[in-house]
Structures are given as C-alpha cells and as structure tokens.
Length: 415
Image (cartoon, rainbow, N blue to C red; front, side):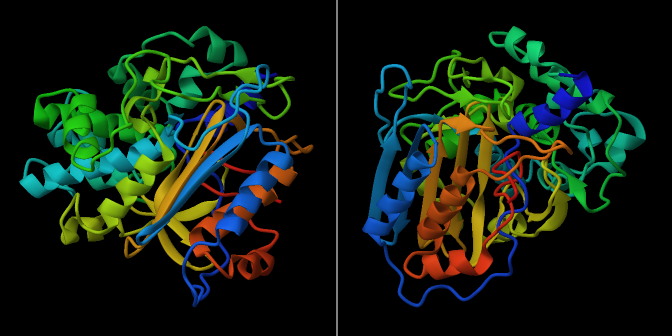
C-alpha cells in the first residue's frame, strides 16, 4: 500500500472520532411516546452481531429507566462473550472530557476562550500563528492545524512499529504544527484534527501546573462519579475488556488484534478508556449543568461547520456535536484501531445512549478508495436510532435510509 493511500486510511484510524456526516437528514419531531423498548433494543444489538460485528455492548438511559445489553464475542478464538460492563477505549470521546476541563478553567478565569493560544504556549506556537489561533479554535477545530496522526503513521508498518512507543505530547503537537495547514485560522468549514486537543492538553498543563491526565481525572472523571474511566497507564486496558480487531478495509485478513497498544499517540485527543455506563452518566451530568455552569455549557453548544476525517461537513461545538432525525443530541464518537464508540445525550439530559464495538474498518473500498456500505453499517444505524429516539425509531430509520456515515473521526461507511 502506498504511503499516500495509507495516509488517507490512517486519518480514518485516528482518535478523532467524528465519522462522516451523522444522519444529516433534518431533525424530525421526537417520538411522542418516550421510553425504552427493551425488546427492540435487544433485537437491534443482536442484528449488529448477526451482520458480522464480532462484539458490541450498549447502555441506554431514559430518566430513571435504563437498559444494557451485549451481543457477540470479545475474543474470536476463545469465543469469550462480551459483557455490558466491559472497559472500552473511548477514542475521541476523550475530546469531550478535555473540553469540559478547559472550560472549567475558563470559568475560573485562568483561560480566556477567545484569547490567542500564543499567550499561553508562546514557545510551541510562536509569532503570528500563535496570535491568530484562539483557544476556541482548538476546541471547535477551526485552527486548521494539521492532524498529527497522518504524520506519525505514514505507513502500515509504522502502525505496528509504534505499538509500544511512548510519544511525548510535544512531539505530537509539533508533528501537526509542522505539517501544511489545512486553511486559515478561524475560516469555516474547519478541519477535524487530533492535534487541536493535544495542544488543549498542553494548555491545561500550563495553567494548572499538573499533568493533563491528573487534572482531568480529579476534576472531570471524579466530579462526574465515573468509576471505570481513566487514562490507562500501560498498553493494556484495565479491568474486564474485549480485544480490538482492525480490518483496515480488508488489508488485514483476518482482522488484526490491537487491544494492547500504547495510546500515547492519541493522548488528550483520544487515549481515555471507559464503560458505556460511565459515558451515559458523563453526558447526562454535563447536559444537566452538573459539571459546568449554564453559560459554559451554552458555549460548548455554539457550533460551526467542520469537515470530518471521512470528508463530510458537520456542525461541531466545543468537543461535542450531533443531529439525529428525532432532534438535537450532544456527545461524541470515538475511533481507534479495533474499537469504535458512540455516546450522546439529548439536549435536556433526559435520555442518553452509549455503545461500543470491537471490529473496525470492516468495509471494502471502491475504486475511488471510499468505503462501501456493509450490512453492519445498517444494523449499527438501526441500533443508534432505537437507542436515541426510542419507540417510533423504526419509522425514523425508514425515513432516512440510506443515511450517511455516523461520526466525525472515521466511523461507518456511507451507503
């Protein structure tokens, strides 16, 4: 595979998860009858496994009601089953955690959202560029700083050669900063880039005087009561977990296991691990104003158009985004080699869903290099809509099929 071809695929592997457009059919009215159709949730989750997904687990919360389930296997050799409480690499959902941490500092007055990043990190981003790029531009991907994952993973061999390498955050930042910019700072559409949130992590360290991982753990994970969310200290996932299988669009046949990996290459753009239950709790507390005050949550919800890694343009806030046929939801998706995650909440914090999968990039590519929709993609979309929209989701599904890929960082294929 050529370096150029792999660079395109590497962008889809990145911890940036905003897969393509996200059911961009215009929002329709929410279902009149809310609630949880447990049978339908189970059916749609099972259908994902039956379509070819190795394993998937899900958690849906509607007020005081909740449902969780799992389908498939965590290990294709031993046939060990997946379980709903498994720890999973959350990928770019890490960006939502980081955005909350930065906005906490905005609330304390140590960071100004529209101040130039050069004020805080003059050695990293000096001169005019440091004056033109603001903190907000990092969090909403309008800085036009290039995506470092495409620089540090130029070939398939580099993906495996760096499996246990510890990347210093400054190296990641400089890799993105040293590559050609994707546009002028502040110009829309922006361009989704993991480097933005690596720099946001370095900003946190500068203003708090502690490591970004420590600050986020103490002031986001613990404040939200997330008992199984962490930045793993080793290449292994802590606690019961699944393996992570990467097919790379048929290049790895059979798919290769990437469950043991040093996630320093993603750092504050995508290295966190969590459970589906923790993720629904986090977004519920965020949207109910329990992690930030209302004015800061409102800042997170100011969206701009950005181009996702797969190429579609989506409306993105500060570390959160998503429109669905049953209304506006807020959250993020996450993609790393072998694992994908979706976690979102409705605007009022009343309904949340999160689910993860352990097989990535299972599609084949067409002659232009674009993924061809797989049966898994349709099943995944069905489960997402059932989890988000509740009773009546089947009608919404029929209304928008075929629908675009889901996510910003390299999610499912576009039918």
